[in-house]
Amino acid sequence: MVKFSFVVNDPMGLHARPAGELVKEATKCTSKVTIRKGEKTGDAKRIFNVMGLSIKAKEEVELIVEGDNEAEEAAMLEAFVKENI
Amino acid sequence: MEKVTGKSIFKGIAIGKILFYKKGEQSVKRIRIEDTKTEIKRYEDAKEKAVEQLNELYKKAVKEVGEMNAAVFEVHAMMVQDGDYVDSVLNIIETQQVNAEYAVAITGDNLSEMFSAMDDDYFKARAADVKDISERLVNILSGKESGKNLGDDPIIIVADDLAPSETVQMDKEKLLAFVTEHGSSNSHTAILARTMNIPALIGVNIREEWDGKLAVVDGYSGTFYIEPDGQTLSQMEKQQKEDLEAKELLQKLKGEEDITLDGRKIKLYANIGGVKDVTGVLANDAAGIGLFRSEFLYLESDDYPSEESQFQAYKTVAENMAGKKVIVRTLDIGADKQADYFNLDHEENPAMGCAIRICLERTDIFKTQLRALLRASAFGNIAIMYPMIISVDEVRKIKEIVKSVKEELDVNGVPYGDIEQGIMIETPAAVMISDLLAEEVDFFSIGTNDLTQYTLAIDRQNMKLDNIYDSHHPAILRMIQMTIENGHKHGCWVGICGELGADPTLTQTFVEMGIDELSVSPTFVLPIRKIIREIKARKND
Image 1: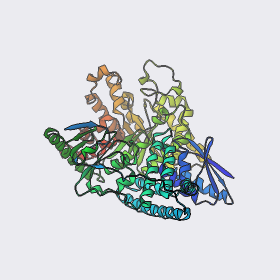
Image 2 (image 1 turned 90 degrees about the horizontal axis):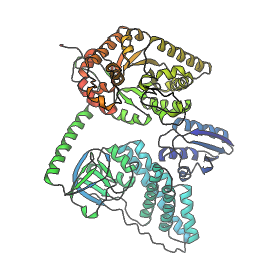
Image 3 (image 1 turned 135 degrees about the vertical axis):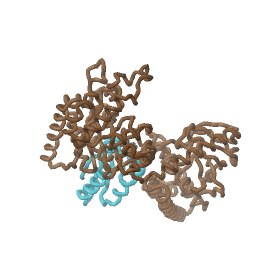
Image 4 (image 1 turned 45 degrees about the horizontal axis):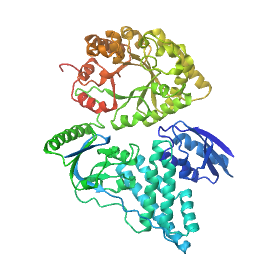
């Protein structure tokens, strides 16, 4: 299991477009990708799960990657998040 | 004539006939199904077709409203295929043995309720997206065509609410304005209206009997006139004509150089107060950002903003400006802007107390900001500007601090770009020693608001003194002249970022004085560009 956290910088939060981009990216992974905000978690490959967390600007979220290729896939996701969210 | 009001989303005038837009009737019946396998196949086919349609809409929207706004259709396609959504539909069909239309409608209702219950306006408004994709699926399942023929004449659309897919399917040539009862200023319709530059009102109590009547949307006052009387109509027609002429004129200036008739180039930049203002800078085609007030980062939060959050804000702006100059003014707090957590001592006369002096006293706060700025400078063309300078000594101290921060970054191998450093000239003291200051820095930016108040000894916050506050006072103009001359003599470029920079009656004076840069509110960029292009920099030439 590989975890990393990030802060959402978009003033509108993790709104439809970035949420969609994140889901698209997570779907490319063979690992199970979980998104966590506080107590709540969701499947990062499912747009309703991600948007359902209602992640707002400046909130911290965590991505948890579990699977055979977890290290490289987590690195890929982290790079994506850094660049886009 | 009937007159109703609403909240205006986009300023402008539209005159035309009303089309009362009704959604396709969505009465979904619950029908018992024996053969759930066939029903599931029917749903899978509809899902595939919906995705196809959304991909087509996406392509159409990219062309019409740009990739950013079109992304909603990509998200819709994702929603249609989302695991939660699909599982729910399949589960309802199988366990309840019902028709696909019903399963889709129930799923849509449940998920849109989840969004409606959220505590954030943006996410609340997403309930409309879920309803929209569910309606699309139901329409496909029941063989109905979505979208509506708008007829041949240009029209004002009046509707309860509009889904993004509905607005994109409409023929833009015929769309004059939107008037809706529901929908928020965050709705996609509102965003699209702004992108398409057409007037839009929300929160209007709409009536179906208006259908086909002549009406006027006044996006300036948020008024909707149905069957306007002659006087209103001619008044609005006049305003619309003026709008159009002014807009056309200014739009022609986009992409043009800021250059005088005799060939002097002026840097015409924009002032911003936060990351979200960059859109306005780009839309108005400013050549850079001449003043990025960094205070908002401090005033918006309850504690000192972290280096990381500052870095992200500066980086975002620098990247969006794509290599154009971004001048960030370091923390200018204390005068009329205060944040509690600074625990500043109460001051009798706060305007005369703080700003850079806080930074020099509390170097930790200042260094955090400098580190964030330097790191962000690796991602664009950032310059740093220091406010409220009164002495050469202050500037030297600041430069020492900057140097030490750079050294720390070097040690840690953190990259940063070549940054220009400049100061605000906003105290009479700075003007008087501008020849000495010019030797220390790369540029000056004259803050005319503070310079005026300190020179004329008039408190800007005091309304009673408003009538004697004369920003065209010869003392101010002479100070500006002096600053420009001293700056140029010692190799500094000189700009104005105060309100006076956007005063169209002074543009010629400033250009004749030799000003290099004017930084104004985004909406003033094109009007000032127009003036620059019509004047000469040298007198009697």
